[in-house]
Image 1 (cartoon, rainbow over the protein chains, first blue to last red):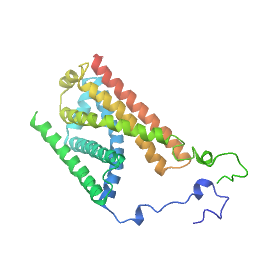
Image 2: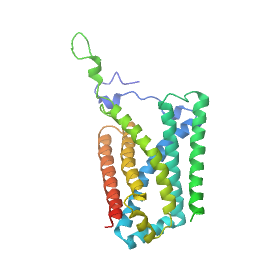
Image 3: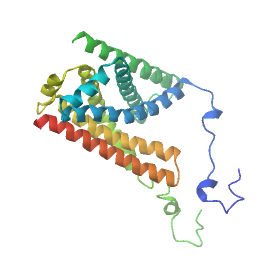
Image 4: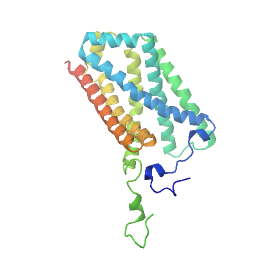
Length: 137
Length: 132
């Protein structure tokens, strides 16, 4: 570490960095942790889709037809499917974090179970919601 | 580190407000968790709304959102609470990865994006509800 012997550098540049992703073996719980942040960022971008839909609907039939055509297309449905999966995955991840906040499931078995539950739960909820949506149409 | 013999400042006071979020950490963590709790039921309802809106025609969507209390209420609550949650979440991400000028710039951009999305979407939903 060179932080001590170069005082001319700004403090921010001299801060020691802890080893990051590249020193760890890839693990399932780690992937789930990353996915929580990634799905969060997808939902962040997804608010643009949401804003477009409601602004178009409030603007009138022509603007709505355009957005409805895009969202009803195959690619549009794939994106919306991914959006709802992100919603459910982030929701399940949130529940997992709430359990940790309460002090439970920190042991190897518990955190592995929580990670599996997050993934299985999010995929299951997404599929169930879309199947229901198509069944009751 | 403060030298106790030459300063009256407590050791805590020399490091307080120097963290990534400048002393807002507790409030920030609580805000994320409280909005997360509110979003748990809202997300389920909102996801149901999304899948039931796909392919729905204009007149049907107008009828759905013209109710004063109904799907529009869910959408409005989800957008307002969700945008607050996502703004706070993105702040954590920015504070993790960006430093110095980048951090300040991105935090400002994040706040502006969140405000714009919340205001524009909420206005549109309210307009549908009051039949503008």
